[in-house]
Length: 307
Image 1: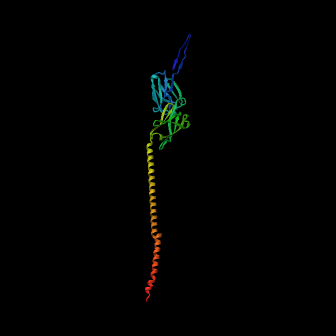
Image 2: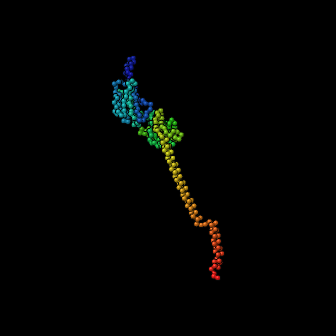
Image 3: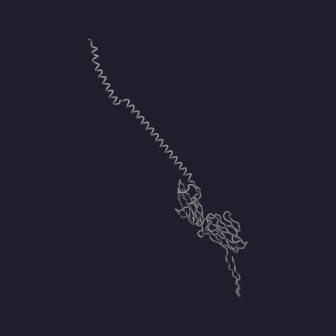
């Protein structure tokens, strides 16, 4: 605070005190990132070295730090930068309860109070996966994620130095505790790995403003799945060939036995019933025997009659 006093005019002495406050705090980081530390820098040029310095604020506008001492060491820390006439307030793990609150820095009798507004700052809520529906098959890898983020990012899927842009299929805005709307985004992308290596690193990176954040990074091995699938296919084909071969052998055996039985039955039938030529010979032999008997019959009777 700068003060000007004792203005003199001819014949008149006037005492006027004009004070100008020269204390103010600003956000030190370029971006206000949810979950990360945020620093408020209080600049006070006219602060006396021995003057009491403190920070007040938070949800209940309480005393946070006083001359380097913190009321909550896990949440707040006070740092001094004498060369720049600054003393800072570090807010650990910035969240929505820290936002839209009044913060005041004071040095002696000088104080500056302002509200930390998300809408007036470069606020970033880095992507956080809410649900993961990603899956992989023999020759495909599908990314299917539901995430919260602000503002809307640009995302890129990378597989073995092959980059693919990812589109947002669903964007839903919802209120938060501080009436700040986050985006609920669903991203889907399917990569046909038939045209790429079956083994490698896959990653999903999203850029929010100028900050890049990796959501997914893992090593996948489709070669093993493909080999197992090939082994199952070979095993199936082998079993099928063996089954068909066994069926054909069984069918051939049955057919051979049937043929053999038919042939034996036919041979037995032919042996029981003479052929036509044999039948004719039998008839001729029978007739010849009867004729001979008839010719020999009178001579026998004559020999039997006495003279």
